[in-house]
Image (tube, rainbow, N blue to C red):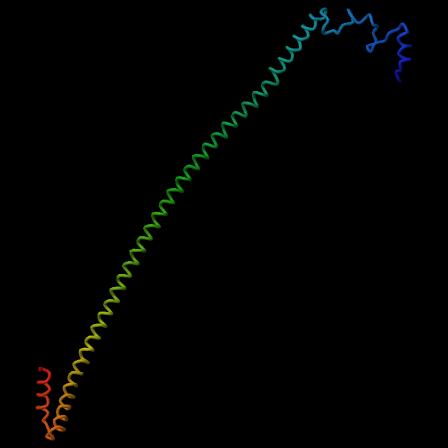
Length: 194
């Protein structure tokens, strides 16, 4: 329904007043007040408040608090067990790390000793090979020197024979007389000395 100024004038002209609560305009104050604010109902309100609070307190004390306490105790136990397990695992990890580090140090020491012994073996083998090569070279040099001395001696012996023949041939050509082999050798020997 629409409210127009004409409708408002007609409703104000009537003697009846209507309110939204359905109570006449003059009856609002007094007995019809909101019950929680009515001082005559305070004692019964306080009684029901105490009864309700008591029932609520008993329910909390007997049902809710033991459950909450049990849950909290269970959580505390679980946290304590987890902390103990974490400490145990930390100790195990520390032991494993110490074992690993000890094994690593032992492996490094063993590796270094193996490398040192291999180095010493290689040095000894190289020294032995060098000595063997030097011995072979010395033997070959000695053999070569002996061969050179033999060849030199043979060459000198042949040189003396060739020189003796050459002296005899030169003397025979120059003088026409033949020279004996002994005289030619004596002349070659005198030439070597002088």
